[in-house]
Amino acid sequence: MTGMTAPKTVTSEAMLATVLQSLDDDKGEDIVQINLRGKSEMGDYMVIASGRSSRQVTAMAEKLAERVKQEFGTFSKIEGKESGDWVLIDTGDVIVHIFRPEVREFYQLEKMWQPGTATAS
Image 1 (cartoon, one colour):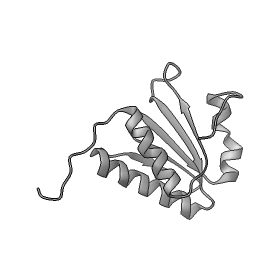
Image 2 (tube, one colour):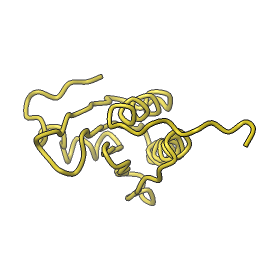
Image 3 (cartoon, rainbow, N blue to C red):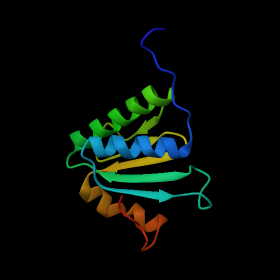
């Protein structure tokens, strides 16, 4: 077991930090985090980000899922990767949406979850 490190403790805050760092490292744009505690049972946080192209959106999702697996030993559920317009990554406590900008503009998830109070990070 030489060279292997134990997975980090999985807390929603640790997962959120990993998600935000991964998206930032991959040049995600307009990254928004929304605290879901008390608003939804689906998770503690939602993160929404944009990629400039379908290829970048797909690559960001794949790298994020791999990073979560490496750092926490958990597998993420991924949906929408085939089209690359909108990919959903469910890490458990943190739900991540990565969009192409025009698709994000169309759905406006931030407004649904935080009317008028979405903050960029």
